[in-house]
Image (cartoon, rainbow, N blue to C red; front, top):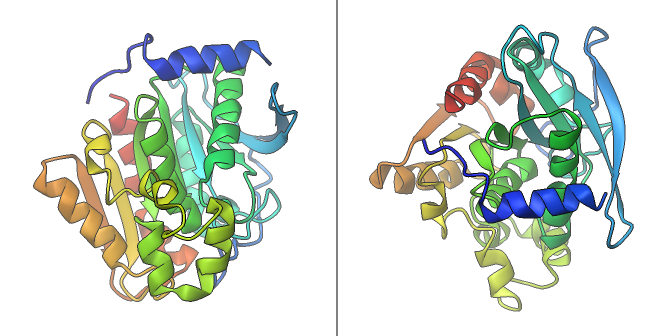
Length: 287
């Protein structure tokens, strides 16, 4: 794993921006929040200095910031239809992960990029700004940033990693779309929101889909560990999305861990048994 050089282009953009300053049962809707009262969660708002667009976000604070050594940041992206009142990470199947990351010195930021953004250009720009703001405010090193997401957020976490490969240290994608064009062909009922997010169909704006396709940009993950988690009974996002990406990455000897769960469908339950593995994955990626 290569450490990030502070002279990388993203770092210069981050500095400039700073100075200028899911999911229910079988659907894609993110689940209702169920925050643990012992967790310290604060609400914030990033304002883009050029457009004035405001992006609210929640920030989970670590309980052992000083004792655990250097702090890290995990970006968490919720499923489609989610919001800061309704997002997967707040649910009970993620409780142990929340506790472990807090204990290990991780901040976790949950941005509200839009209910159906699918990591389009607007979402990428907003997440750049939110991330820069959190890193500066809490003195977190830019080489300790990780990303995770569920369903739409899983696909979007991979897409954002393609956008900022010099920033993201590791990525954990839960039930992800690994190619949005393939996904809407398989599941046409979601073609309308994806087309709206991207400003056209895959035939109309092919480049917009190409640059967010993990399947078409596997070499971007050469130095970025990837964890893929998928239920084998998933019919909303077929498990082949994770399986095919894992196969491509492993063929190139890139670091990729694929976890499949035989009896689970498109549900937050896929995280219940793998929470400690995910926490270990993020921690090991920073070592």
